[in-house]
Structure formats: structure tokens, C-alpha cells
Image (cartoon, rainbow, N blue to C red; front, side):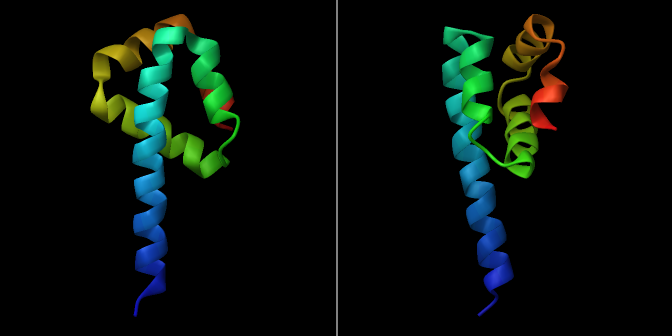
Length: 75
């Protein structure tokens, strides 16, 4: 059994789940997204933001416009 593949899959599933949560939370503002991201690892934060953009480019563009310092959140 390839546990690395399973770990990778479960990591990616978590990232997709958190990206969807971030999208939903954006309706409550930038701070709601920032709060969610603060609970994740830096790798997860990066993955969430990439998936966020992939899922909803328009909303991601709005987030970037509202919070130009978002890159600092994922560091």
C-alpha cells in the first residue's frame, strides 16, 4: 500500500474542503477568511488560496482587491 499517495490525497481533500469554507466565509469579510487560514499549516494555507482561485476566480480577485496583503497570511 502506498501511504504517501494516501497522505497526499487526504491532504488535497482537506485543502479543497478548506478552500470551499474560505469561499463561504468571504461573505463575512476578509477577516473571516484570515481567521480560517490562521488555523492551518503554511502548506495548507497556500493550497487553499490556490484552490480558492481555481474554484472562483472572480471572488478571489475581489479578495485580492480587498486585502492586497493576503500573501503575507500564507507565509
